[in-house]
Every structure is written in C-alpha cells, then in structure tokens.
Length: 175
Image (cartoon, rainbow, N blue to C red; front, side, top):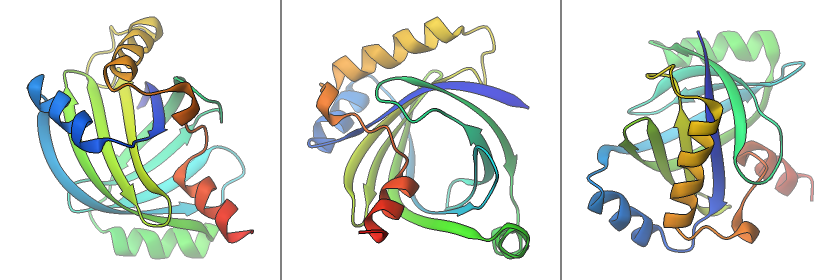
C-alpha cells in the first residue's frame, strides 16, 4: 500500500530540549532502536532494509533531495527474517551503502519523531507527518503539522538537511 509523508531532517544541537518538549506534550515514546539500514542498488527511488530491535521493514521510497518539508511516497513490507532478506537482496541488487544509527522514536497522533545519533555524522531530528493511519489527512494538513513542529523545535533553515544519511555517508567515502 502506498502512503504519503511530509518530512524534514535537520541537524539537532539540542536533542534534550526536543525530547523534553515531546514529553511535555505527552508524546508516546516507542523506544530506542539500534538500526541498520542497508540500501540496495535500484534504478530509481531508494530501497532499504531496516533491521532494528523495534522496526524490521523493507522500504521503497521516492523523495526529492530538497531542503525543508518534502513529500515522500513510500511502500512498506514487514520483514520477519532480516538476515535472509538481506542476503537475497544483496545477491540480486548489490549493496549501495549501510547506515547504522541509534534512534529514539516518539509519536504524537499521526506525527512520528526521530532523535538520531549517526556515528560519523552527528545528531539529527526528523519529523514525519503521515497519512498511513489517517488517509483523510491532506498534503496541506501534513505540511502544516511539520511546520508547527519545526518551529517548536527551533529548527533553523540553515540546519535543514536535504540528503539522506546514506548520501551523506557516500559523500564522506568519496572524499
């Protein structure tokens, strides 16, 4: 099934303040997920296998590389055997890059928040306003929610990231 997110990613210089805000708004804390995202070579979009202690998912998505809130169209499939799935996809497609991160996951209604620590890259906050559980939410509704939380977290324009962690790691390797 296809879903829509409006999302941002930004450098986060004060993750403790963001977490305090979320908790003050009674956000639901899902937990700390130690994730390994394996990106595979595909002709368009991105295909990644997420293996974590909370999230275990194969994700295909298309999203423009632009700053600020952006639309992401995606499809998900739960994965029961991450190791076997990774082996099959590696043989079929080849691995582009692997991203490992420590992620705190929170929810307020239909908005998902990530506080990420990515070795070699730093601390980040992600806001994903989505219609996965509420298809009545329009793109404008989702943008409004995303913008609200950007302001609440004091995300400055200069801190917005328009590349994925995978692109950032690939750029480091090419230096």
